[in-house]
Image 1 (cartoon, rainbow, N blue to C red):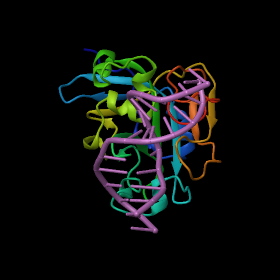
Image 2: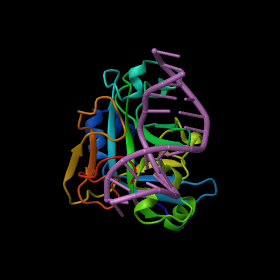
Image 3: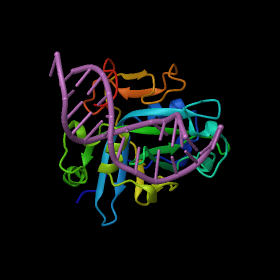
Image 4: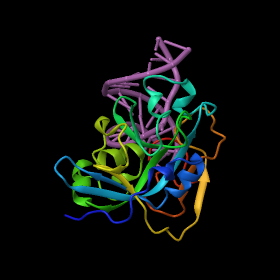
Length: 205
DNA sequence: GTCCTGATGTGCT
DNA sequence: GCACATCAGGACA
């Protein structure tokens, strides 16, 4: 069994402007060590920024609560939450303490541990393996236990990767109803694992 | 291909 | 109560 390549991104990487972090996470590797010690990872190809109390789509817009206290906490940690009664979504906390912001990871280009990921996805491979925020957490076995943990070691890490030689595209965030005008979704143009290439509309895949 | 719906937990209003 | 940063599967065309 292999180990993921690249260098772990330090906490200070995340302690910056969230839009910058969202762009610079493209190409980095989200790495997960399962309970039985298997490494699963992929290159991040799609992200979204959620920025502060003034961003209506950010959970931080609700202010400091039990749920959002992680967003107000230290940058470089995970924020995993349960959505629609069935899915877990993975975010990295950004900016300084006291400023609630995060980057949602929406898609991965799978790189290591493909067989295990496909099993986790009940046989679905190819595009359906990791092309969506809930798909990738299921593939990588990320759940409630991975909420509020550091990303600089242990079983959940983000490591750097050589930049993909493609354009970074941006557009409106997916699946929200507030602040739809802010183009805070970023993706690698042409990558086959991007959940919704521009031009496709509506819900579903 | 598009459209629609069901599954379902959690936190805030 | 209800909104919600989703996905899968079925009904059509």
